[in-house]
Length: 281
Ligand code: AMP
Image (cartoon, rainbow, N blue to C red; front, side):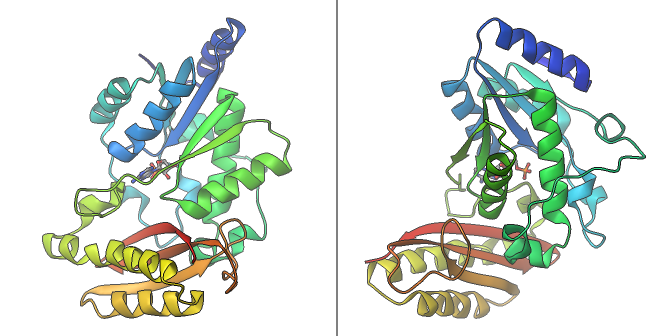
């Protein structure tokens, strides 16, 4: 496995592999890797001949009240996980290698980015789409792998790739969970033992949503029951729990066949998101 922080060197390595006929897959990450990230690299390994993982804590997707300095950085351990999962190349740029100080361009998806996470975190998705666009231009992959864990993010990236005729296949991989149901996240390590226990209500509310959907309960009622369950848990501050259309994120119609339950909540200073696709009776 090679590790390289230079955009030009990385572009040249991938171009060389593709000239030799390789299908190239990229897995963008912010590091602090866990089994969820590894599952994306493993999926790319199965589909592709040349697998690139990127590790970059992107400053432009953090809001003014979100502490980028507190974000975990575990590069040595990350590189071991990349290698074990089957990466051929890890791209590890620093901020000065990714952004010119006088940059004047960005990539913005409208509409989809105004709801839910975008509404709560102004500018967040502009940072995401701009850095992913740059990573796509540097790595020029055939396929790119994202987690369903960040449900709205993978939709926004699909929209960007379609709108800009990128021709990159976006693959969305299932959410990897801890044995007790908590969705794996780099931020879970911030949870106190008490909050870690309380966090289980999030997965419980998604399982409740699945049961209610299968029982034919109306979508607004499902969202309300999820909210009540989460709000009843001491120390968990619900941000939103909604049941929406899987591609537009507008509230799911009562006669819809499928939808997705999306939620966000804060435990102490740590904000967690999770989701579950639903099939209605
Ligand atoms: P991050 O490092 O948080 O920016 O995440 C990098 C990629 O890993 C994103 O596409 C995430 O959706 C994905 N990811 C994060 N957590 C999980 C998880 N528990 N299961 C599957 N994919 C995940």
